[in-house]
Length: 345
Image (tube, rainbow, N blue to C red; front, side):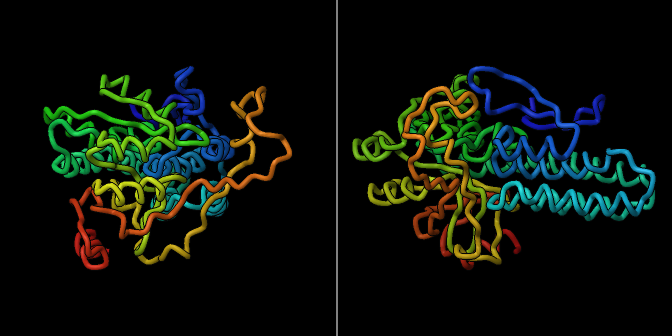
């Protein structure tokens, strides 16, 4: 099933509540943009492509509120777009989904037409995500050889997209082609998207996966246990890939050990007009570092009054990236020439 979709009976956004996994599988429904914003902020829905769909459906959701006047409706949609865009400042896909549906919706002349246009465009974006993930998978699968063990980081599968996945989508596609692929998954502190989500997904698909702590990445590379590394991205600019905090460390380790380091991301993740210094890196709550489970806050794993620095992402310079796997093909260096040529940006 899809990670996020429109519930036509409830006129609401339905999504997998990812903060409960792997303990509990639950579908929640957001009936207001405030509920959706909360779901985005607390990572009930996460991953750049999934956030693109969330932003798109968010504008459709805003259009399905009760309106009597077209101009007031359009004004509300603009405010809703700004509100939703403020929830996660680093993932550029979110902004793309919001802006694309907003621009289409504003062309409507009646309340019903605006509702229809917004929802149709949001559904298009969701369908496109699935299709481009499959394309990425087919392109990226050519980089993986039968018998490879792939180290991956964070969660880049179905749960990070509408379906199939980016980096995990490449692995899924390679296995679908008949290749024997094993996975080493880093836990991905502090919220453990690797151990909670990636491992859960791969076990569901009966894909051979071994879980390690983030600090074990170096030793498994040193011991020859890793053939390739593949990760996703939340934003790619002219000189760097922004991804889950810790990706930069993995990239340096891969470079030191001569292991190819691939990044899988769709065209909508590229923000090629910007450089590393232009991107705001989201800083998250100190609770994520000091509590064993921030939902119940029962067990401290650090003193309550400790100072905390908790950036959600880091920037990996493109010099560490062996190739970029996109829905338009695999892109190799020099990126300053080949990215604009391949993606036509």
